[in-house]
Length: 356
Image (cartoon, rainbow, N blue to C red; front, side, top):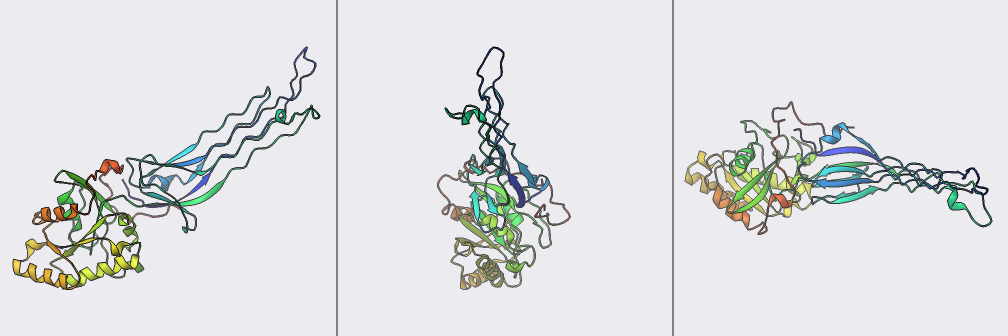
C-alpha cells in the first residue's frame, strides 16, 4: 500500500430541490387550489475519522466529491426527498485545511469523529405554501438554495506516542524492527526509509505506537535530502528517541545537526522530551562508547543511552525510561491506529504528494 500524506480535493454540497407549482384538478371537485410541494434538502458533505486507514492514497484517484441535490417537489403536496449526506472517510490524524493552507478547518484525532464541512441547500417552497386568504391561486415557488463548494487540502499527521529521529543510517529501521512488529527495510545506504513507518511496541504490559521518519540531514528545513515535511508526523508525539550512530565521524556534531533541524521546523519539536541514544555500540569497545557518551553530554544531552539495535543490547533500559513519558494506559486501539506493512518499499522513489 502506497503512502500519501497530502491531497487536494474538491467538495460540493447538494443544492436544494425546487418547489413545485401545481393545482389540484379532480373530477367533481369544484375548488381544487394549489397543491405544489416543497423541494427536498441537498446532501451535506461530512468528514468522518475511521480506524484501519493510515494513508490518503484513495484521494489520489478520487479528487472530486459532490453530494446529490434534493428532489423537486411534486403535486398533491408531496415534498421532494432529501438527498443523503456524502460521508468522506479519512484516517485518524487527518487535518482539513483551506485552499491556501492558512486555516485549519478540522482536525480529526479520534475514531468516529464527524464534522459537516459543507451544508446542503434547503429545498425551495412550493406554491401550496404561498396560499393565503387573499391569494387563493399563487404561482410563486422557490428554486431551492444553491450548493456550496470549495477546494481543501487534506494533511495526514500520523498519531504516534513516540517519534524516532536521527541522521540517515543511524539505525532507525533496525531499531524499530527490534522493538516492534514493524518490518521496515534495512539497507547499508542513506535514505533507506522513504516514508514514515509505524510500529506497535509492547514492553512490560504497556503498549504504544512508535513512528520512524526518514533521516534528516543538514539543511533539511530548506529542502535538502528528503526535507523536513515528514516531521509533521511526530508533532503529536509525547517524546522523541534521537538515535546517534557511534560509527559516524563526529556523534556530537551529528546530534547537533538533527537538533538544529527540529528547532528550525518549529511546532514545538525542539521542546519535546528527547532521549539521546548512542546506537551500534556492538561495533565499539566500552572505552570508546564512554568517550562518545561524554561528548554527547558535553554537547547538551542530559543522559545518554548506549544500545545496539541489531543485538538488543541496552534496549530494555531505554524502553523503561521511555515509559515515564507515556500515560499509564497507552493502547493502540484507543487511537484507532492500525499498523500495516507497506508493499512499496521497493518503489522507484518518493511518492507523488499532490494528485493535482
